[in-house]
Image 1 (spheres, helix red, strand yellow):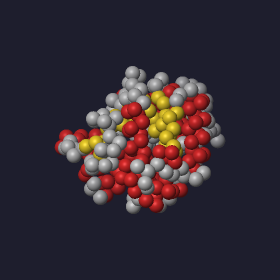
Image 2: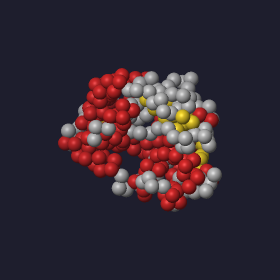
Image 3: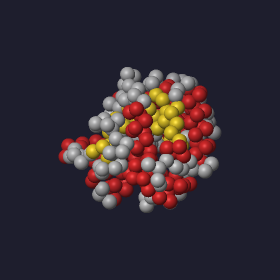
Image 4: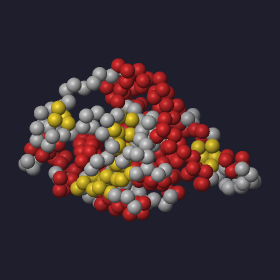
Length: 307
C-alpha cells in the first residue's frame, strides 16, 4: 500500500510522507509543512487579536513545559524581541529540572532569562502551603500573577505572553459556562489590554492544541519537563480536559469550534457590558495593585514573619 502523502506536498508534486494528522482541519502534513503551518497559525492569531508588533518588548512566562518553551522559541523564529521569565517555586526536583530546560533554551536562542527564586523572595511552595488556606494551584497562580506583572513592568517590557494552549482555554471556558461564572467569562479572551499598573497580557497559542504544541517542541528538539506538576494531579481542569478530549475524538474540531464560537459570538457582548473595577488600589507595603489595603503576597509575608 502506498503511504499517504502530505496534503501540501501533493499540490507541489513532491512525495514527503505524512508525519502529523490534524483531523480538526482535515490536514495530513509532513514535518516541514506542519512547522510552517504552526508558525503561520500563531502569526495569524497575533495579528487577528492585535497582540503585539515587532516594536514591542515581549516577556514570555516560561515554566519549563512544552507550551511556554515552544512559544518562546516560535516567537524568536518569527522575529520578535522576546525574553523569558522563570519563577522558581521550589518544588522538590520538579522546579530544578524545569528551570534547567528554560535555561538551556535561553542559551540556545541567545535571549535573556529572568529568574525569580521564591526561596529568596518568600519561601518555597511546600513551606508557603502551611501558611495559606488556598489550594496549592490557587496559591501558585497568585504568586505567578504578582511576580509576572511586577518583573515585566520593572524590566521595561510592554507585553506579557503566556503559553496557554487551546486545550487550556477550552477547559476553563467549559468550566465557566457550566457554572455560568460571568465575571470569569468576561475576562476570558486572548488579549487582556494594559490597564494602569497591569501590563498587556496575551495568549498566542490559544488556537493551538496541546498535541500541536508538543509536536512543534519535539520536532525542534527542545527538551521540556514531561510530568505534570505534583500539586496539579487532582486539579479539576485535568478532568475537564479528559472529558473534552473524548468529545474531540468523537467529533474532530469540537474544541476549536467551541472556543472560536465563544470569541466571535459571546465575548464581544460580555466586553461591551463589562464594568471597570473601581475598587483597585495599591498595597501600602509593596505598592503593587490590589483590591485590599494589603495585597495577598504581603499578607502571606506577614503571616510568615517575613516583613
